[in-house]
Amino acid sequence: MPLDPEVTQSIEDAVKEHHQSPAVAKRLLAWLHAISGSTVSREKETELFSALADAVDPSTLAEDL
Image (cartoon, rainbow, N blue to C red; front, side, top):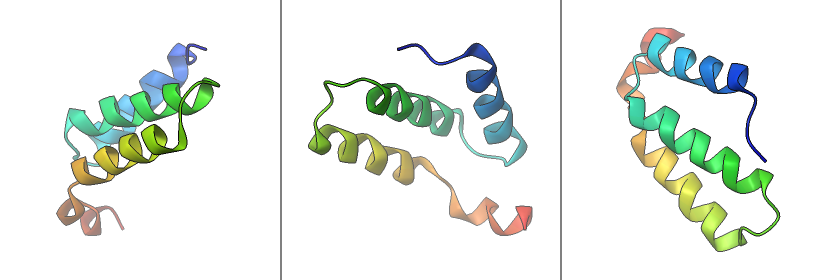
């Protein structure tokens, strides 16, 4: 099931606002697409989430608090 374009845009905007790499948005959107479908395995879901977590730059998170 495709995500609503407003959700996609909001994710991209939030990633930019919080000084994260565009890869974070891409990986988050890939994960959301995967979990919204019924055919993704738990292993694949975990793999996508791990890739997302690896893309986050924690050094910018403290700036946003």
